[in-house]
Amino acid sequence: MSSNKNPVVPVILSGGSGTRLWPMSRKHYPKQLLKLTGPWSMLQETAMRIAHLGAPTVVCNDEQRFLIAEQLGELDGATAAIILEPIARNTAPAIAVAALKALQQDDDAIMVVLPADHLIREETMFREALDRAIARAAEGHLVVFGVRPDKPETGYGYIRAAGDTESGAAVVEFVEKPDAATAEKYLASGEYFWNSGMFVFKAATLVQELTRFEPAMMDYCRQAFEEAAVDLDFIRLGQAAMEACPSESIDYAVLERTDHAWMVPLDISWSDLGSWSSILEVMDKDEQGNARRGDVITEDCSGCLFHANDHLIAAIGVSDLVVVDTTDALLIASRDRVQDVKMLVSRLDERGREEHLTHSEVYRPWGSYESVDHGERYQVKRITVNPGQSLSLQMHHHRAEHWVVVQGTAEVQVGEKSHMLAENESIYIPLGEKHRLRNPGKMPLHLIEVQSGSYLGEDDIVRYEDNYGRS
Image: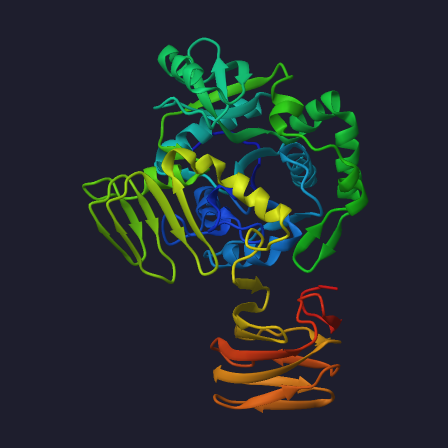
């Protein structure tokens, strides 16, 4: 462990959408919340990686706040300060508000800033490099981790450092994502490292440099932080100030312009899991180079990734394909074109579709629901309410609902009356009637909801009371 005496504040950035990993990753359930490589999500793995430093500060968007709080709560003893961005403004403003939070704790606080969606295998080697970075940050350097490349990767930016880079060196230049020929030259030279997007620096040094290079951005961040309100267990930044704040990465805003940039090398297996090809690289493979997850049967296939969800995937005689199945979407792509998945996501958005926003199973702070059938004037959902949780007291203008309890016990308020329902019992909610559903038990409550009416959209909800602060 480092002998550094400065307090260390771990910061996790969890605002990404992971569009290249569609259809698994969606806007409201992005890749950092998925269990892509093991029993824990990427966010959980990141939190565990820096748990020895103390409780983290997590910066995320409003829509994912309950999912993030729930996943962090699944880790033993995990607590976090969760800062909510009303609008995405890239990494510089996100880090700036985290720095202001760290300075509330201590004027000499050192921040360890990690994206929530990175895969690191060699935890011990990472901690050793982290100690070196913390020591450099205590001296006033703005430290970035540079990963020693093992292939000519075109999906990452690069860093060139001066002199001996075994223990770290001053940064000479940051380089944009190169073409294939340039990436080959970078690899051959041995002078370039992948820009990991992981940083260590004093909060005060970061604020000082950001004030120097981007004073307007820093002013808006200060205003948003000063206007922040505590909402349940969350810190909700001032909306008007964040909307006015310039959007910029920390690389462009500070690191490429400062005289204090320093690189600490990482000689470890590292990936930002930015595409399905990178997922394939880290998965176990058969003798033909195929990676499988879920119910998959193949014959004479090679170099493929098959990711099954609810359905069997059966493939014959194909090579170098990525096949990812979910409940409501199927992706089939050539391995050398998976970086273009984000183009498909853009097209879905342009056409007003919703498959890039949510899965068929939608998570809520009280549990989840999944649409299983729908027609012109009806919709059927499967609803799960977690133990002790409750939906809001609400009313619908355009639909009636019929609830059938499949498993567990439901406490249902309809109008002024309360009803207890056991398995195989049901209740009818007339159009326009106030109602509420609660799970009073210690096991998940599962029920089937049948909606009927002229309009069945999720925005047809009038909330009167809500345990989670939703309007």
